[in-house]
Length: 465
Image (tube, rainbow, N blue to C red; front, side, top):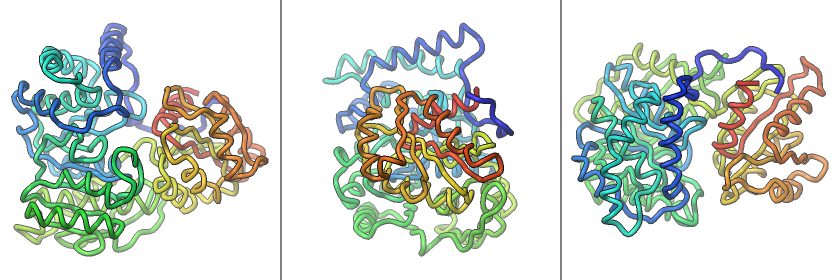
């Protein structure tokens, strides 16, 4: 790849360990984890993870937690909640998935991914108990279940003052759902994983409502009506307090700013103005409102007290937020943006955000998707903003065959606007070349999207480039 111009500073994503021994130890753990069921294969229950937590001494009960479910925006919201709690001098643990580049990203302490050494140590600490639980279950613990146990154990060992936990899929039977979070967050629900969660927003909401525990506070982002009804009913059933975006909290005003956006947010305790968020898109402003309300609820604001959080601290926290792979600029001349959108709702949000924040005269898309996703819906969301699209594949077995993806793309874009490059590095090169055809100062750009995995691999290629 050509060298990039003006690389972003302070990459929040870890790289492979430089120490050969540490790298070898991490690779050994990654190999052992890879022998377990992957994240797309699961048996919907919490039996195995509950058994593991029991033999580990229930580390997940050693700290209060915020539990986040929804379809889109979970990871960005988790990072914002983490930043806010940290700014108020709490030691935080954050568990999110999937990772963009490195498995260690999934478990963070104090706002930073745990070190490779600590990741390996945590795995080796829980490993003997994995064999014990495996021997007593019909199915072995899955990859995600083991990582979840590692996160909960690492948080207890730290120890943390608060854990911010993102579900892997759904809620009721998700491996993370062995916590009793005092605050449950539901980001916008749309159609994704329909084969496992249901074919309507209401059915999906029924699964995700499982994170709402008795007496908790529920922070609801704006939802489809049928999904909201299901979530509200669950809250009533378990005597949970509900705060709804657009009612008890929300975005008062937002304007595009250099490097992000300037917000005025209404929280549970009052109004917060002059909040700079270094992320693009209206969807991130809504995520910020949800995150703020969640942290207010964590501190008892809105229930026990009505005062707002300290404004300067809130501003400082939001200004520090990074969310890799979410409308992230990774190079200039031409500008290349990465976004992990992998379902139609996420793609629509990304398309709107790109148009608003960048104003490209011509935008080239690079799309590599997983075969089990609504690929047509994603492509249709991007069709109005892509002049041309380069279809490709990432390196995983889940990747959709480029020719099959191209067949769908031709139906959406027309043959003249579709280029096929099976290798991702070639696809990036082709897209950059197409963008450069307009000249250095013409304002063309490239958006790489379709999958978190595609974005992660592109990120590595472009930042090494």
